[in-house]
Amino acid sequence: MLIPTSSNSANTLSVQLRSFNDLGTFYASTDPDSAFYYAKLALTEAEESGNQYDYAVAKRTIGQVFYLQGAYDNAIDYLSESLAVFRVLEHDSEIAKTMLLLGAAYQFHDLWKEALIEFHAAKTMFSALKDQVGLAETYGVIGHYYEKTAHYDSAFFYQQKALELYKSLDDSRGLAVIYDNIGSIYEDLEAFEQAYEYFMLSAKYDSISQNLPALVNTLNNLGDTYRKRGIVKEAVEYTYRALELADSLNLNYEILSAYHDLAKVYRANGREDLALLYYDSAYEFSQDLFNSQIAGQIANFQTLYETQEKEQEIVQLETDKKIGRQTRNSLLFGTVSFVFAASIIIYQERTKRIREKHFFEAEKSLDEEKIKNAELNRKALATELENKQLKEEQFHMELEARSQDLTAKTLHIIQKNRILRELKQQVEDLEKEKSKKKGIGKIINLIDENFKFDNDWEEFESRFDQVHAEFLDRLKCEFTTLTTSELRLASLIKMQLSSKDISTILGISPESLRISRYRLKKKLNLEKGQKLKAYLESF
Image (cartoon, rainbow, N blue to C red; front, side, top):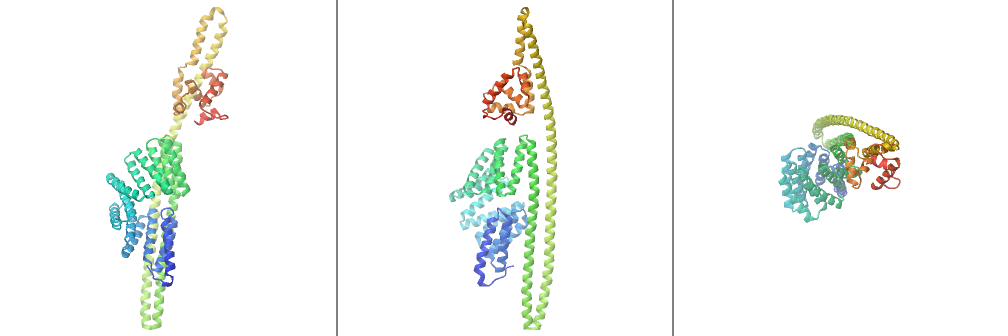
């Protein structure tokens, strides 16, 4: 309800209204609570002053807040009311802007037909106004709509039209959005290299325009392209960057998205322990986010409800004043006015009760629906976590069995080489008897060959790889000059064997082992003071 005010305070109210609305619009996409607060102040002032334009702007901002919070029914109601006022005012540019927002609310509420009608109506109006910025934004929105409905040719067509306009306008922020949209289309088509190129362009223009919230989303998208191509290191790197930036900006949904993406990366790479850690983080964070979102929505509904009550109080006060004046003029008119006022009060009370009932029913329905969804999500996630835990337990059991097998094999080699060394020593003692020297010399040579070329090494390396996956492959790849003997030495150090056992297995003296360790350390480019054992254990 719009109530006129005196002309003396009109200018002051106009400035104050614009300030509140500007603040509401500024915070709309980054801080919904602040946006709602300022838009609510603007709405109250506009109602008291009778300023229809600012009333419509405030309604639109509140609708946008509900849209961002996922309360699409309320968003559609407020945006529709805003649109109706702008149409009465015949304010075409604001009509077009509101149509775009209303179309987005329809789309996310799965009202696809209604969404497309609003988008095309906005396109027609922006075109008639020759508003190139609005037209470019609308092309991008329509292209995004067609991507979500899997009409990729139409999606590319509209994104290219938007790209051409933004290039002509030299609009960095707009270019970032469109490059991200095109990258998303390529990602849907599983053309990940092309998607990566467009996401990189989007990140470039996000940085130029200092649009940090958008940059978080783009970094996440870049991480996805690496993850879906199986490139783990870069996938983790970009997703961590997105997580850190989102955390610094308090972007809760982007933080949650990064947790999920990191879990997917580690799960695809076989790191079930880290995957489980990030799934747990995602679950806990989503619960906190859900609770805060519900609290925010209830607070917003309560504020709007209180506003409606105040409107009724104002109407009642105005009615009471009218009754008083009429009573002073005439008893007859006073009696009629009293009856009229009583009727209004009864009507208002009924309306108030109906609104209270609707409000609490809506609040209860919202709570029940959210709780139901949260419970379903919790059960699904619990099942998934349980399956992961079972897989992880099975994996650890297999790893333990392989580790025991590897230990047994290692002990076998140690025992065999110890026996061979003792046998060699006994034969060397017999060698002193000249008559047996030639035959014994052959036996000694045979034992030495057994030390150097033990056939059991192939089986040992196979079992070692099962326990320490890809350790030798990664070592060979990063340090290409390592010899077979040095790789064997690295494997035994990785197993945390003592120097005595290592020298026994390799069939060399402790002094030779010390020299071999020194050479291996040099080839691994370790700095002075850096421990070889610690480096290999963490490699």
